[in-house]
Length: 257
Ligand SMILES: Nc1ncnc2c1ncn2[C@@H]1O[C@H](COP(=O)(O)OP(=O)(O)OP(=O)(O)O)[C@@H](O)[C@H]1O
Image 1 (cartoon, rainbow, N blue to C red):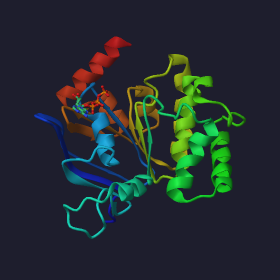
Image 2: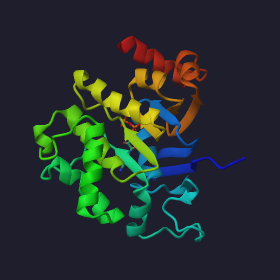
Image 3: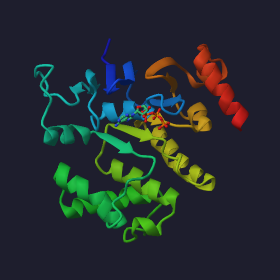
């Protein structure tokens, strides 16, 4: 059996007495899109932050394409890499946040080119060419000189996606990427995510957009109290959930629509 492209094994994360991740394991094949759904506070964001070591797990391990994130390859289990090296590994994993997190005093172009130059060693000309291609791909050609505050939320989120792609990541993590948007702007961000999925990007998406989960995800994982309690094909989990917690969650969502 070939090893999975992404594997998170037995991740645990506590904050004081509170257990945010209670032994979470998840594997993804290359090109898979996994939607993570679940109630607020169940630990979905924590899972993403532990996968890319923005917030290191207390235990467990993460591998992307065989490389163990956060640790030197072949090193003792307990030898966590210096932050500089984790940053380099983390560059393999793109992250898109709910609140875009663009640098407000940088133009769109500056937001895109800084990390590829600093972390990937691209020249300004190379980074700029890559950035222009990606802005074109997310439908924002010509907005290179704009500042984030001059853009709509949907445009800012598309810049944030282009910025993550500028690092040529192997895996993309999305943390409720449309939750902060006005409803009429959700579609333009979902469209960019769909096209990324169609191009074969491996994506782990925390979302409340059930249409995205149903139509674009290859798999849905339902999260409850720090655990994945149910995972399967979207049609199976969303239409015929087996776990009582999944059933209760989906009923709540149906009622609120
Ligand atoms: N840095 C932290 N310090 C203390 N507690 C934290 C920290 N980060 C998260 N938590 C707690 O861990 C729990 C899980 O949080 P998390 O943000 O992962 O949930 P979530 O499922 O993503 O929720 P939401 O949908 O509201 O974003 C929450 O109860 C939260 O208060």
